[in-house]
Image (tube, rainbow, N blue to C red; front, side, top):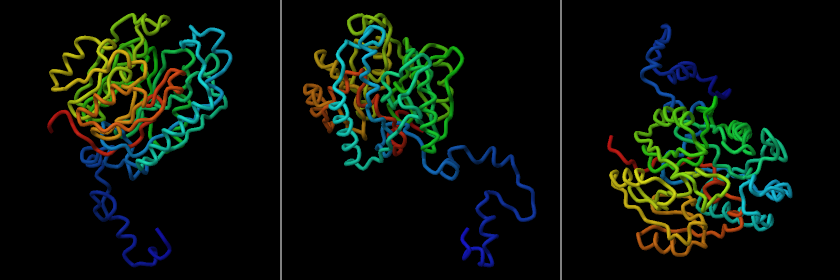
Length: 357
C-alpha cells in the first residue's frame, strides 16, 4: 500500500475486503478457506505466475541450459558404453550455435526464455561429472508447480538438487520430489492434453516411482494417466541399456486425438489404448527415428518445432495440417537428447481436453 493509499479514509476497509468471507469484528471462518478456495485459486497471488505447462495450449515460458564443456569431457571417451553414447563427441561450438537457434525461435514466437545456470560449475552427480546437464526438461511443471525426479542413470543422480534450486530461483513452487527406492525421470512423460498424460515404465521409471507421481498428476487435473511399458531389451538402439525408453522418444502430441508415434518403441496395449481414446496415429518413418522427430516441442495445437533433418516426417505432418517449424539440431542430438529434452516447459495457456467436463 502506498503512502497516498494510506491517507485515504477507506484504505483499511478496502484492504480487509480483499480477504474472502471477511466479516467485520468476527474471527475468520477457517473451514470456508478449506472447502471453497483451492491451491490453484491462490497460485498467482502467492507465487506470482500461473505456473503450469499442463497440456498443449500455447507455450508461454520456458527455461534452458546452455551447453558447456561439461558435455564433451574426455572422460566420457574412456568408457563410452558406461556413459551410453556411440563414442562420437559433439562439436561444442556447433552445439551452442544450435542451442542459440532454438532460443531464438522461442523468442520469435513470443516465448519467454530463462537461462538456467546450475549452482556448481561444472555440475556434479552423486558420483562424478553430471553428463547431459543441459537436459532442462528434468524439471516437470504441471498445474501449480513442479515434480522433481529421481534419476535412474548414476551420472544423473543429483541433478534433482540443481533442478530444485533453479525452480526456486525462478519462483516456481515444488509439488513433489520422488524419493525412497522410487525412480521416475518424470520429465520424459508426455502431456497429451490438459487432462491426459502418458507415463512410461522402463529402466527410467520403476513401479514405485510411478505410484508416487500418479496421485500428484491426478490432483493437478489429469483424468487419465496412461501407463505405457518399455517394449523390453532394445539392443538395436542401446546395447548397454536393455529396457531403456522415454515416452518423449516415441510419441509427440500434435492436437487433441492426433499424435506422431514410433510404434516399435512402445507396447502394443498402449497403441490399442490410444486408438480407443480416438487418436489418429501418424508413424515416423523407420529411417528417420534417430533424427528424434518425436522429441520436438508442440508449441500449440497443430504447431510443432522439430529437427529440420527429419524431412519425410515433416511432410507427413504438413500433409495432415500440422505446421512444422524446422530447426537444425543434429549436433545437439549427439550428446543423447533433443529439443524437448532440453526445454523446461514452465507456463502454457489452457489447451484442449481429451475428456468432457
